[in-house]
Amino acid sequence: RNRNRYEAPLAQTPGGKRLRSDEATRFFNTGMDADVAANVGGTAVTPGGGGATSEAEALASKPQEEPVEESQAGDEWQRRQRKRQTAVQAIKASPDYRTLVLIRAKGDTPLEDLPSTPDADDSALSKRQWEASVMQWRHGLKHLSSMLVEG
Image 1 (cartoon, rainbow, N blue to C red):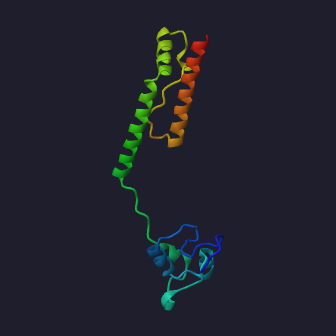
Image 2: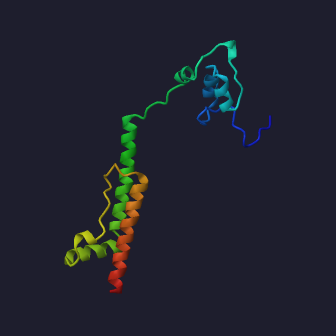
């Protein structure tokens, strides 16, 4: 059957999540009521004539997602932490950072006016927050370096 591209796929939950074929079979075999089936884009099909009488029972029989193991989460954090530390080390090897070190050594500029290194070990920062703080740090280093060259 040729479906219109705007028509909802048949193997989809009421929330819009597409299902693999084995999940779709389990989902449709629970015996959804007609309004739930309409949201899925199909018709109310209850193989064998029986099935769950409520949406709550249908959702209860749906397989639960497996939780992420602690070791996997820890490994992922360690990988991100190494990437963050590598990024900080690369920036600290730049000429702009060396300029900052010279300015700190002189002691003429208050420390709060100088850009500070983002904390690579802060797991509370999301990826985007981390990237934003690194960009802000690099921008501050470049600005400081360019002001020293001009002045």
